[in-house]
Length: 42
Image (cartoon, rainbow, N blue to C red; front, side):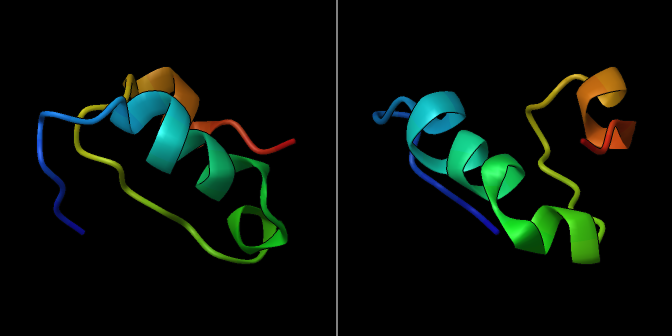
């Protein structure tokens, strides 16, 4: 996945992914996210 730096990607892109059921079913690597957040599943 790629994105422009001109958007608030943490809130507009990453958060919806992390809050979705897909995050539970799949492993996502979001390149600008802290490694600790990447490994946490709710």
